[in-house]
Image (cartoon, rainbow, N blue to C red; front, top):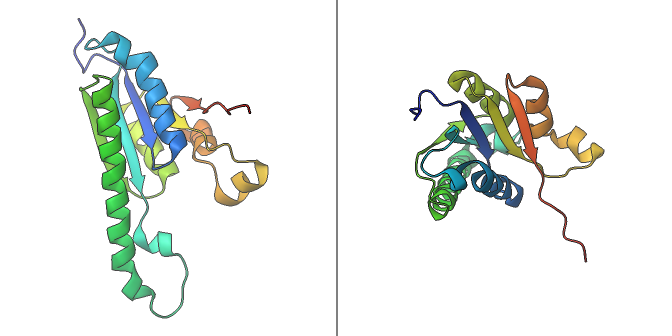
Amino acid sequence: MATGEDKPVMVIGIDESEQSYYALEWTLDRFFAPYAPNYPFKLFIVHAKPNAVSAVGLAGPGTAEVIPYVDADLKQTAARVVEKARALCQSKSVHDTTIEVFEGDARNILCEVVDKHHASVLVVGSHGYGAIKRAVLGSVSDYCSHHAHCSVMIVKKPKIKA
């Protein structure tokens, strides 16, 4: 049996979106839960918390007073994301995971974590943005697919047909 150090590393990027949790659950169901406790990967779950200053952006007078409130809100969001990810892992009996929170842009953070842990696979959810939204907002999955030094799996939540 391989030890955790012998296993390839899988990194999953999460945020507070429904698509992100779907990607985490989809991955746990296919790569971890059926193999408990002999998982084929060492799992790192990563949340990138935006910097309060970048979240506020360019603003006028009074910006400095708002920053602590924005930062507190971002920390609460990060705590909720981590707790929800931890609960999802526990519900699937996947216990040997590392959940990390970093401050910064998700695109850069995920690529840095891939390099840091020498990951074999990066998993991200897809928000399903169209070309215009993707151009304006930027796409984490698109950026990572071009810049991460490993395979990138983009998990899309199926559209429900009415």
